[in-house]
Length: 306
Image (cartoon, rainbow, N blue to C red; front, side):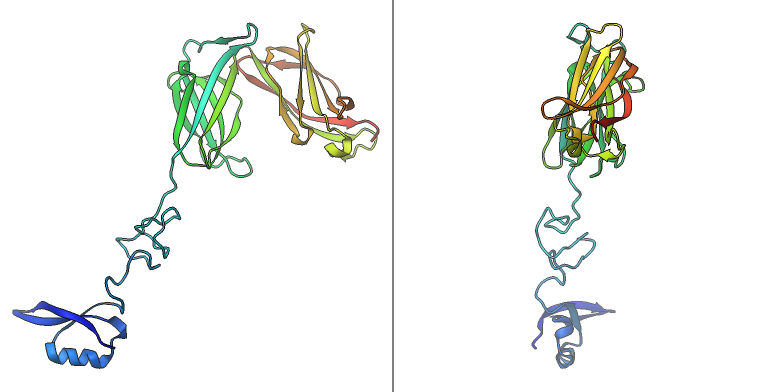
């Protein structure tokens, strides 16, 4: 195999000696080295068997410091850039939050309360199971603006909510309900209504046979019409409202109620909106102000005839 070579000059002590620069590396035969050495008295070996640099971006070999990665190609967007630099996932997602304050008594919008001029938008990263994954990202906005965009977010799923707070976010007036927002592939909008004079009930449920006391699925119970909660104001019985949930969800949050004390009835319904089982009535359940959420706990609904 012939060696690729060129002339070069190297200083040895006080002597300027002409050398042959050889590109051939391990594949050049020993006899060729001997011949060249006898001719020039000096050989500089600079690379492997291929022309050009010994390593290059895309050869699958990391060559620091110029390269911080090399995945064997020149494609970007796969964790290693086209110039063999490690790629950091872009923080380029955004969630636009919209909020409003409302009075149920007057059925009208309300202004931000005195001393609470800030809307803090919380975006809590969550994993595939909905569990917290890290700390929340908090962005502060003017409460009166009623909108704000949290940008530069890592593209993932968040549990998002809004808190109305004082200027430096050390005292909270009210907190909105939360919702999961997935911005893995595109930006999203989150909207929240905060009740200044009311709040919500939340509940979970399970179904059991009324006679057998054995667990029943929604299908086994015939609860195709869902689970219904009916709340009645103790002091004003005409103030009553119902909410319907998908039985399979096993969880629900009602619509807003004026702050008061309520009696709550919860039943599983069939496809004709008839009860197939009603839980014992819950009495003296309090709804607070400032968007408070009252947890009714897990309700056991006995299914008739089972």
